[in-house]
Amino acid sequence: MAAAQGAGSSSAGPSGLPGSAPGHSSNSTVVAVWEWQDEFGRWRPYRGNVCSYIEQVIQASQQKGRRSGSGLVSSIPLGRADPVLAPYVIDIPSLTQFRQDTGTMRAVRRHVFPGDSAAGQGIVWEWQNDEGGWSPYEMNVCVFLEQARATNHQRVDLGPLGYNYEVDFVAQVQTNKTTRFRRSVQRRLDAPYPVTTSLAPLHTGVGCSCQQCWPNSGTGPITTRYRHSMINFPNSSTAHQVPGRTASVSSSSVGFVPYNKPTLTGARSTPRLNAQSTLVLQQAGGPSTGLSASNGVSAPNLPIKMLKPSKLNQALAATPTEPEAVVKKYLEELKGTPADEDCIICMEKLSSPSGYSDTCESSTIRPEAVGRLTSCQHSFHMLCMLAMYSNGNKDGSLQCPSCKTIYGEKTGTQPKGKMEISTFPQSLPGHKDCGTIQIVYHISRGIQGPEHPNPGMPYTARGFPRYCYLPDNEKGRKVLELLKVAWKRRLIFTVGTSNTTGESNTVVWNEIHHKTEMDSNLSGHGYPDPNYLDNVLAELAAQGVTEDCLGQ
Image 1 (tube, one colour):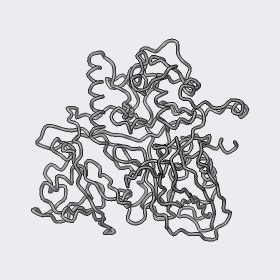
Image 2 (cartoon, rainbow, N blue to C red):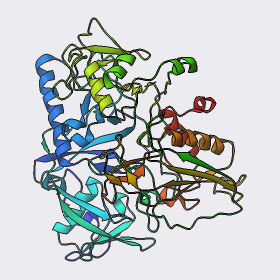
Image 3 (cartoon, rainbow, N blue to C red):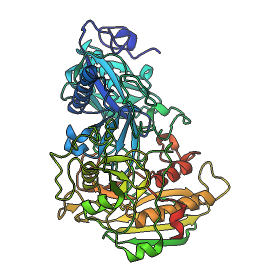
Image 4 (cartoon, rainbow, N blue to C red):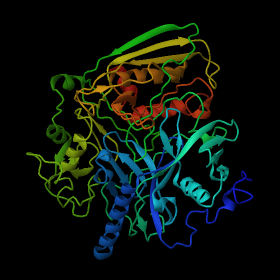
């Protein structure tokens, strides 16, 4: 593809850039960059310090394996690199990032770049999103842009890298080549990425007997779950940068801070055509029995099992919420410990004390105690499960880090608000045979409770009311009923940090995917989308919100 004209050369395309392909450099030093895949299929880099920690753990594991004959470490808790990431673990065999308190998974990957590239220098290129925040390009794009800048190009075409944009370095803007919509871009200096001598990609897939897989693993790798695909839409490579109004979807910020993108369309005009059957669900701000939401993963490959105690037993026995009591309720302490089995939470052998013994204390659970979950039979350090529970919502439930079996009924931290439901006859694209269900969420600013990040501090509520749409057919009505359950269980929203504006202590989406536009699905937030209803049902099921809940 021909590129725009640049200074000092006849073209500014990749062929005009020396060493534009990652890894092709006269500098023999290379750096490793770990990235996670967002809901649009784009890869976003972890920060340099997190990548350094991941590399250090893998290198130490490889050295230990050469000495002892053991396999590569199977999981890496990111909380040891950054306390904000405490709920997250990278499962190495499947190259999956797993959030322990909700069961959400995202794909991860490792790429290497020349040491003199943008990655080696800690340079990140970013584009300005609709809400004024800054979102990073993929690292290969950052490397490409930095090379173009270093060779005095004034403009560069990102088409060969999968983006329908041109970047003007002089004006510091990105221009959509189809719509001519312009956004600001910036160049930011961060910590350099870690130097590595390992150029080969890590082994992935089902654990085997190779040096990188643990022998005799009791839990096995976590199967990858793929996110909603944008490949059915035209120009899908630009789906995550949409001019005009912003719709809310589940997402995460650079460094994988687990908060989502709020919409800023509070004054938005929405159709109210022959509204009928209006329903209003009030939701109190106090705790309620329920389930906390996931990080927005689409259709899971893992089966979700819900343990269902009888209603009589539920009425007779109050659910314990004290951390030690919850762990002891769902884990049976083992008398003997498997010598070769590892705890996928802390990475230590079950025959050794918990890796969290220096940060998590308990008067009733010993560091060396090992427990087996009563239904799925997976084993972990009991102190590791205690640390995992304490990092979550502390609602009296547990979720197995290995198979996602849910023990108890989890709740979210959604502030009090109102859910309005109405219908009108206008059809959604792709659902011409039925009318439309409109959901309107109302949440006002308030004071954070003990379940929120900063109890006693105010929180804001930007962009409310928020409007969402479902087809008024059998499956759409089923999704609606489950969303009602999710609302009552405080799952739809939470209080956290916006990944786009950077604002903290604000109401954000809690990773259950909503369609906030009726049409124009170039953004992925509207219709048509033939997979949406199945995907959102899978998201809800992954949190235990299933048809079984409707009869309770």
